Length: 225
Image 1 (cartoon, one colour):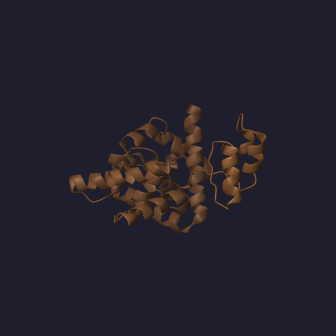
Image 2 (cartoon, one colour):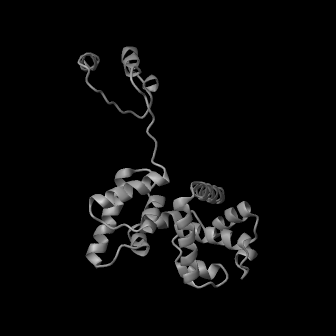
Image 3 (tube, helix red, strand yellow):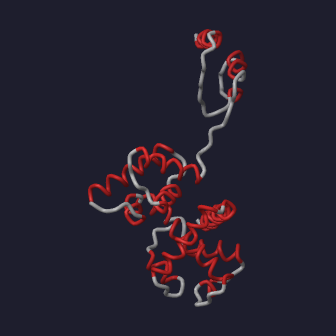
């Protein structure tokens, strides 16, 4: 019956859109005549949205509902919710509801409260030490140098990257991150986060570096687990 329905729609020059979890030729028990017809059109794989696309989706959703969404919050949500667009938009709705109920402005701290279970799930896997190991390998620096008071660019830059990754991948507070890196004040951590976030918005190669480092961190964490 579907075969004849397909033919009727096709002959009437109607648009037909089908979805499946496999290409036509790999679907079990699908008749050859249907496989051939499905292959007449465009067969495309729909992948999970990349980080930049997830951020764009969040901003588009925020604009539709009249919500002022700070860039840092969009980045945090996009980093945690990776696969499901509906869940991504749903998380934004939860953040908006939390802000309305508590009378608070939308901020990274508020978003982290809403994302709590997701953040803690990540925290069980990613440790500060995993981030430091990945950063140390990539930039050829030692932990002692990252925790030192040295201000040379070869040390400051990887230290800021490490702070940003720890803030993104773990539930540690600004104070805890500053304490780990030689007892620095939380304002130093805030400056590092802003510095890295500002650069990633305008530097695509730098953004790829951060994504590579996040992958390295997760590889290290998985190997440890």
